[in-house]
Length: 391
Ligand code: NAD
Ligand code: WQD
Image (cartoon, rainbow, N blue to C red; front, side, top):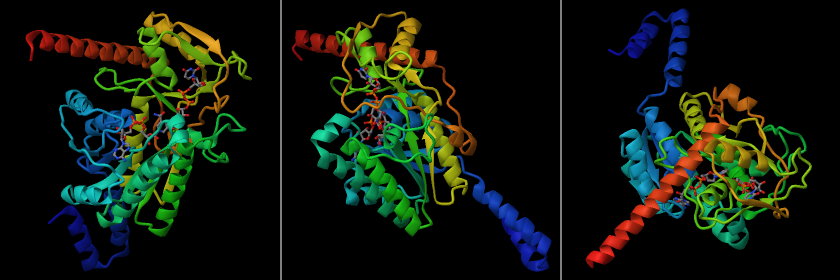
């Protein structure tokens, strides 16, 4: 007889209020304990943030199933995850907008307790050109997952939201209760819409719990340099552009504006190390599976420290002892002047805090850039020798 049923039996036999109280307590304790082998679905798990989160989840003892349609990632990422963790997670190339395929996958991999939903398209500029593609991909994917959750008894969902929902906040650092502003792009709008869809769904179906994580600016790579950010074409984001410029792939970094109302005139952001960000998902998962989430909780995931473009550029050059040719140009349309997080609520409730130093973070970016360059060289050498051998 298990300890739990023994207590239950005592409860029935003695009908004793004290024991009933103890039982209730023990039940609560059981409910709030998470099993180290809990099975988690990670959508978009081969992407930038997803892959780092999968590594942390595996290292925390979870069993992982990944779906990713490789629209913005590479199957080699799976090898990187395996090299770091020694575990090859279950993976299938599935598009989350495909309800039938998702349903089949969940039926095949029964027992999934929660999902971390990263899969989405994320390029702001592209979303302005192809709004319907963004609405379809980001919104339909989420709706499918929310519809499938009760069918497959999935208890919780962690959703990737963004600080973009705040626009330019009036008060800094920004807290979760700051008013949301009209999105400046269809991409940003999908995040606001998706947050609402999650809230409405949980309100109608209290068996589903959710945590919305509003990421600030994720940067950096795993310290092993076996996984990192894989920008597609010319990077839009600052750090991949800095790294590629330092490596000579790009000629010059354009610093978009030095006439903002900030100490050095360049824009300010809250740059968070991707491994710290990944760990916030473990904390969120523990909270959901531990039965601590009543309905929907929303957290800022940032460091609480704002850094200007020029400060981060300077840190990258100094720490890595490299030069990044750059010039100051005009402002980029749609840029927010300054935003950084107040992460107090996440620090308290998730018992999580960003810990990586800026130095280690910019070091990891350079190490990852050098790893990518090596890979490119290897590919070229293999291509060359194949041509020589005529194979
Ligand atoms: P990413 O593009 O590197 O990863 C997304 C992954 O999802 C990719 O591997 C892609 O192939 C996959 N994917 C996209 N659509 C899919 C679909 N329909 N079905 C299956 N797989 C699909 O992006 P990321 O930077 O890792 O971002 C992850 C999440 O975090 C996204 O939801 C993004 O909007 C959000 N976010 C990112 C940032 C950031 O700056 N990187 C900031 C805030 C929020
Ligand atoms: C950071 C700073 C630029 C490139 C974007 C999305 C946002 C979120 C995170 C997902 C800005 C400056 C940049 C360059 C530069 N993603 N910059 N030269 O704009 O804060 O946010 O990514 O949700 O939705 O909009 O990030 O990395 O593009 O820019 O001077 O070549 O670097 O002006 O001040 P951003 P970013």
